Length: 320
Image (cartoon, rainbow, N blue to C red):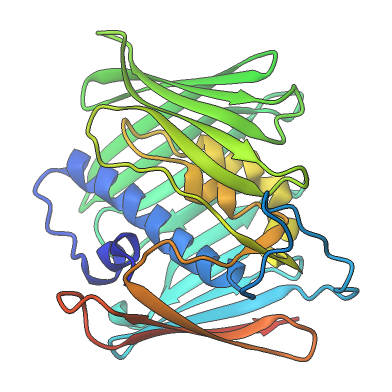
């Protein structure tokens, strides 16, 4: 199984300090989202051309995601979507389902307002604050560990095709630079994290796209911890239901990832118009099933690493 996925499936929150819990927890949230998005994105095993540019001419219909059930180690994680296919809530049987683990809220202008996470410690709330023009002005993270409250606020400033976020974690201030193709902020081209006290670049990567918008690869420019590696993506010619229904949340999802280290590549690939066909791990085998409309209904992933976890991870899909 993908090491990135396995980290979420077996990890228990036994970190001693609330700051470390928050960082690990935010990474865990990204991991399960990446897993659930990857099982959405893999729906075929053919790519039409070498540069990843594909068409959707053979798919006249469009189904909207209703529910994904992820089963592993006798546990279930159920993710439900709104009528327009956006994240609604997630339940986890490990803490006594149907208690929600993640719950997403939207305002009267259909913008993502906040999401909450409870059931594990620390409990977490992430709130998006918009300015008068509708741009994300702040993202506020509040963690609650049995009454011990920690709040991190990231402020965002817009400069032409660049968005800069700044915050302080564990008494260290950081700058997060998101560079886009143009001022529509519809496609990110580079991401950089800087320690404001030392002006040291902690992480930086750039992105390459096919002509239709599929993310082809990321290029690691700087990585102080040395934990990231470039990824190359392949796609089918089918429509990606996640990307179509979550375009409105593109900036919310990218800008909230304000940690000192870590890549945005999997978050970005989820917004490709076509579905990713190559697994993110070479140590897994995937079997897929589809409905008559060509949409994935079941995905079974088996780990081929003898030192990895036993058993399969199965994802089943329902549509409106």
